[in-house]
Image 1 (cartoon, one colour):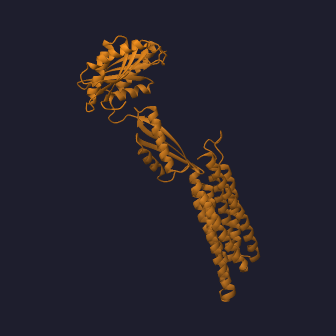
Image 2: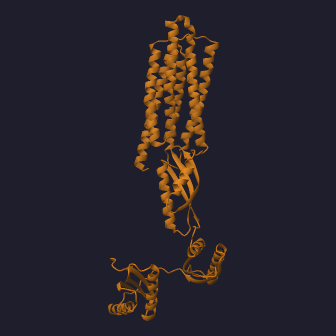
Image 3: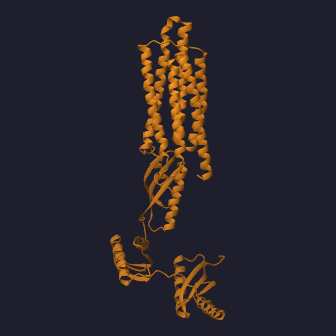
Length: 475
């Protein structure tokens, strides 16, 4: 999320929380006044419920402001957990209020008869409450879904339950009115108000327990069921990933944190492995909104890995580089020749020890290797500037090279030649043409033949690179 979009999100979330606080203040005041005037325990219970909603709205308002703060030295994962803590506070307040409502309802049902005055003010107050609760719950749900805010979602859940609890109170008041005005013999209906209060309490308890369970799950870093497996499966579909897992998930407010291990062919270069990990991250970001992903790459031996790849991977693990790896198979036993590159400032004794360690590691992983012969050489020195070649000398050298390549059967000419003077002779890059249907093994043999003949027949040549390309290709 960009800085601009993050600022817009913060503004919208704070506006939703602030409007919730304003609405809660108005509804609590209205229900308290009407409840005291009418003596309705149902309305007073709703007033207490709305007062609790006010506290919850204030907690949510505070949590939303704090949770959007960026990570700091003490909170490396950000401040999102404050949303989960606010939800826990709301749950505890709800349960305490329900205990009071249940106590008062039992007193009115069995011990303390109370007169309830039912009038239009009572019904009007509850109707207004339902309209306001519908409006603000929709506003909060919309912001919660848009920005994955658990604090706003908890607030929205509170106010959506107010709709049902207010409906229960209206039903209770209607029954009391029927008992007082229409059927006086049904005077027992006056207790319907207390029964309605119990109904409100039961609704709130149910919501509280649901909210409390989710809150505790978030604080305990409980992963949503099946999500870790889905992430592993999604990562496993990325090209280059041999296996994925384990996966760890945690939630901090609106942000999820996921870290997982992927197994990648150990012969892959660092850049290749990094690109595979980046692709896995992008796939997970499409699966989970607002997620922070950390991917650990674990190199593993690929099934069917060649001997050369195995040797190179073992050398890389030991901080060495190899090339010109050749293996000879003699009755199922391998004899390996290779060149090993070491830092130029390393002494012979140090280099020999590292190469000996490499040879032991190769034998340990490849029991069929009987003998290893290593050529130790320094890592190529940085490119040094050299003088340009004199034009006459370059023309003479070019003619010699063309004469040699013209005498090699199988080639169809050379279309490019680059001559670069070096510190110990000339470096040649020769582009030769051949039949497009020629097997690659034959093309490689021709390239070796050109290299050897140029090194033997052209004086001053130190290095030769031959590129065989299909005749008819451009460039």
